[in-house]
Length: 161
Image (cartoon, rainbow, N blue to C red):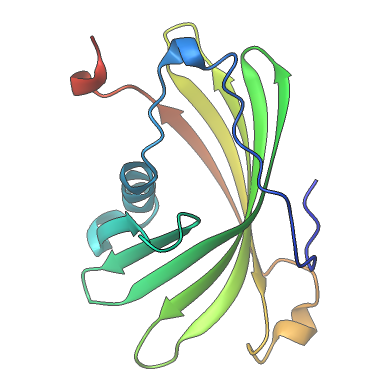
């Protein structure tokens, strides 16, 4: 389980034993772009992995703003061959000319491998304020926003074979 406020959290790899047959491709830039566009629409222009830090995704918006998301912790629990839980903790920095800011985001996702080889996911995202945000101490360790998403991950046509 992730704990907020810890300086080091072990990075664990996703379980592969039961997912090998599903032939899942872990393309973080592709997945990040498609998830960001699903959440934020066509405002998202591009997503890429920082070539100097594989735990850092950079999102560029059409208005030239950027979001830097650094994974600072991960944990995975394999429930059975078709179900697993994953939690990731991110530090985010929004590079906005008017007022750049930071926050911390915890994303917990329950994945289920379906008989048709798709994967469904129920995702809960909690956003926390961190200093120097002026209301970080007021919010304390409580999230300032909670989001719930239902995802369906399917293999693209060019990946089928």
